[in-house]
Length: 137
Figure 1: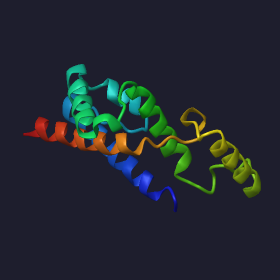
Figure 2 (figure 1 turned 180 degrees about the vertical axis):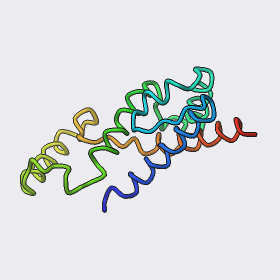
Figure 3 (figure 1 turned 30 degrees about the vertical axis):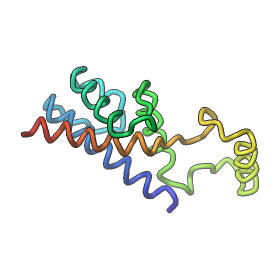
Figure 4 (figure 1 turned 90 degrees about the horizontal axis):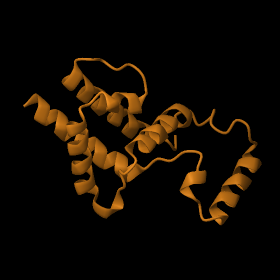
């Protein structure tokens, strides 16, 4: 499906985040509450992970509100993984019209139903992996 790549990337993120929580706290998260999982990680480690992700992404990424990113990714994972369910409230033509209207307004990010933040997700996954490798070394 169209969202497969994004969902697989989110699964990678979720595994990396949960592995880091487990490595640092010996607690085993079992849901998709990324904000809560992140909060279990020491602030120093959080800062190092975000600094590394920012370095990797340069000016193309924004981690100034990591909680917002985590909430957006939770939404994508929960609402976007089954395309046949997402948008059930609209007919195909209504969904198309809504999309066209959104694009005509300049596709404002804050009005998107799903926000992927794909580049942030990619570099954060790499940084989570790095932090986990350092912890396990």
